[in-house]
Image (cartoon, rainbow, N blue to C red; front, side):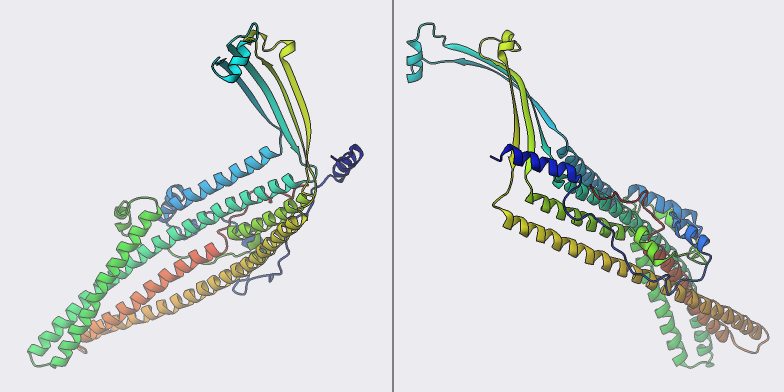
Length: 486
């Protein structure tokens, strides 16, 4: 047992230090560019306000899109799992908090015994005058114990649990962002496929009209059989596109129901109602790359896991030091009668100062500390990599968004030109300059360009969703993460 002077010195030293052992957490500095390469020059105050927009899907101006996103955020089962994980992490933190506080328990028992006189013990006792074969015993106790966290090992464990809870909460937000983005993307895909189906049906009707005209001319000897076969082949190609688009539309509608947490077919009537592809916002404010560190929930997850790993180093270092505990018991015990249970003679009490010190286990403690440091180094590398990949994600999304807008502008100009060409063909046909075949060919070309423009419009809107997701959806934590325990 340690001398009282040594024990007192250890306690005094730990109390005077007033902080936990191990490194205090400092958020690592990330060297990121001042702005994104694809970032359009905007007013910084306006850019910041728009980048913080939480309900980014409202920027599309489609009430039904907003309704579906709201349903997904309320009913999605991935979000339900994420919420359950947060509850588990919060319970884990509660358990760690409880370890820092004294614990107590109440116990009691009553026993009634009848001694046999046929056993060796019974035979001996039976020979004693006044021996009673029947006996009763009563006992009740109130016990308490408290591990003194003099060197902060438990505190570091609590710090790690708090960081893990914050990581779990940020993970739930990341799931929320992913669900909202996926819901919006599916909705846009449904509207895009519906628009493409409309164009494809027009193409089929145009090819049918063209084939009818060519057959009529062929029957009159004014068109070769080759033109008939070409027209039949073109019609077959146009018809073949319909089932593929219809199947893709069914798949997208089923996916919408699943992400809303409902059986396939539940919301099909709502989706079948005619609606245009929502227009992508004219511009997306991005903020700066450094804003991602506090706005993207997946980066918050990585940073909080790094903080937890740092705290576990302190918890491992605390194993070098002795652990003290206080325990006590107050109660009453009697083997006479229950009426004497709480009398002065039945009272009992005890107190104890406990010591546990892994004096001959420092090699294992060294290994545990090195393991904790290795995990912290791994989490640091993961955090830095996540930040770089997040920046890359935004850059790629901004580039795609910009190029899709350019593509849509070019295709719109082309459709306008082909519309004028088709009008000129119709005018020439009405004047007898060209045949109806030329008009139908102009229709076919215009519809092909229209389909390409619809696809570009869809992909522009989807790239906007991807950009909002890459930017973190404008989410920011309600408060700064908790400081390290001290």
